[in-house]
Length: 243
Image 1 (cartoon, rainbow, N blue to C red):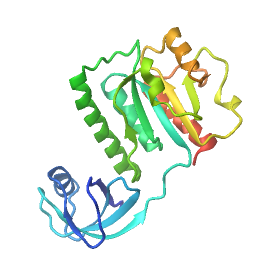
Image 2 (cartoon, one colour):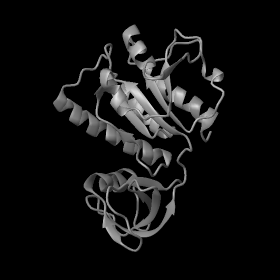
Image 3 (spheres, rainbow, N blue to C red):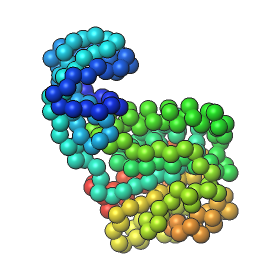
Image 4 (tube, rainbow, N blue to C red):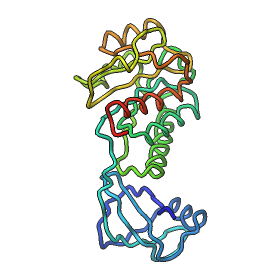
């Protein structure tokens, strides 16, 4: 039986006892039916898994003892950034969830001209908090103990402020004839730009190509925006990462 993994955003020290928050306690005791003495793995983003045991079954404030820790050691050797054109609701959630499972290190939500989602500033704060919950849930499921970074929403005109120098940059563009198979050398870091539901305008493509993005055609079929990011991440992990 698979051991339950939960995120705990506080310092974890072997030999200590800690209380889970109400949400995690309720999920573990009422939903998963965890009993006293059951082993549970906690992680706080430092790269380690902490093996714990439940001391009580309080559904509001479960007490655990921290028994030991082990380095998760499952981060990819390829550093990846997904630059995702802002899309609506569950499409964005899907892109984030699957990208985290596939090992992405950073996600940058970008407002493009054809983005169907236009978040007001106050709603962006709530949305970012929601996206971080999606990241945490994906880490709990996939066994990752390092939380990928998800940035604030940035406009495509200001994307240059978020880019790293010396990193291979990919732009998905169905109009080009170049494919990933034409890229022969390995890379240690990759930044991948995926447009929103309506795609990118010619002006936006020119802007990104001027910032050293290489236009890539990803196969003969047009994918939905929420499919494209995870699909490309899988491909680059296979070419240069740990797949």
